Amino acid sequence: MNLAQLERELIAAARANPPSERVPYAFEKRIMARLAAQPVVDDWALWARALWRAAAPCVAIMLLLGAWSFFAARCSASANDVSQALETTLLAAVDQDQPADSAE
Image (tube, rainbow, N blue to C red; front, top):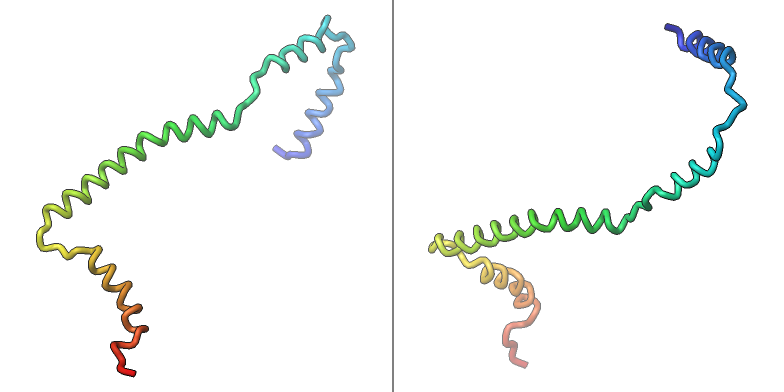
């Protein structure tokens, strides 16, 4: 169906049935009372609820990864000590900048 033709038919149907001039008794007061009764959305409460729901899975993931890293380090006896390798790598640049026991 053509969109312009549909629009003309809807406008013709609306003109054929004009709205009533009669307004129900205290209509405005009922609408205003209903609007005032709507609860105000608290954005902070929505954030707090979402963060509390996310806390339990985050703690569970942290515990699983912590246990995995603890047992992986204990089970592999031949694994290199990562902290020593990191310290050696970081201090290598410092050792190169300082002159080795130069005699003056």
